[in-house]
Image (cartoon, rainbow, N blue to C red; front, side, top):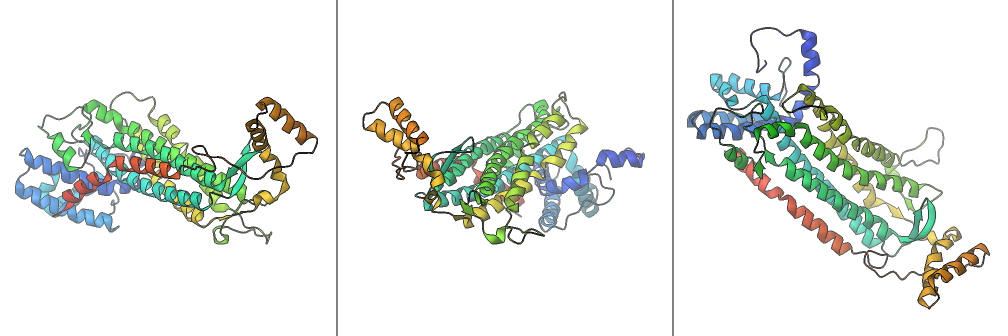
Length: 444
């Protein structure tokens, strides 16, 4: 079944090539497609294109299809082009010609646009939940180990005193910035394209504000040409937000692999989270974090992939945009999987509380000595030179106590302030409004 069927057969190879993986990808969008159709036909009844009896029957069947989707029983049948065609076919089988009326006033172009936006905003909610869970775990570990010192590095050279409180807390605060980016992507996504049809509107007197309200969108994409131009741009914007989160997780994974190695020995990963070697019986490899790093680096390439697909397209719809689904739709599950694994291991990671017993780290206290001398009245440059000369002469003896008190330092982590900032960002999503709208739309 094809919604554009005109009574002739398309060459089988042409059909295979043009459909591609679209039927597979459209399964991601099935729930969103049903929700969008429910809002659309409710609006059609309000402008007289459906009777109240037709609306009641159609909504009842769409709820049945929605249950099939949520139970994992929904399939796009062989020979059916996409999710839109499958839903309409199911309605027509069950309700006859009434099922053919649901497409009035819309095109597959704005139908897939609204599907994508409904899908994306739900996925962003799930990603945000997972980011918040990892954030909370990092904050707990930061507080737990706030008094355990470790070396800080520049150029991979031992530099100055740091702490596990700072290390865990740094990644927590990085996730706050990532969440701000994700919120911006969510707000740009949460605008209604339905009613833009093929990108030039409709001669039907569509009530676009009604569908906006029914689906819980913050506003509509007002200009119908821009609504269509938003295809690809929306995915790219969201991909940048996902890539930002992936960048933070990849860096954390790299640190964990490095610090877990015997040459560092700063942390120990839970043995049940490591893998072995086929010939070296002593090995406990950090494969989970290595794969997390690789997968997150792959996700950081996603915005460029999308950009290269849609970058040189003029206004209007082009089939090129179909290809974005293949790289974009699975990305949410890939990122969430990495977030789950990272949270699991961070919660169970063992910290070495005696790193500084090793004299190789003595020199990281040189700056502390320079600052102590400067506090006692010696000019900073003279203090720097004195400590430097002592180090060269082998006379430097570290004092391994630190007294950092300024905001954000070892002795003043500002974790409460960082948590308050995360709470402020979280509340800005206003997920509840969308959840209430979708619940109301799907109730009998």
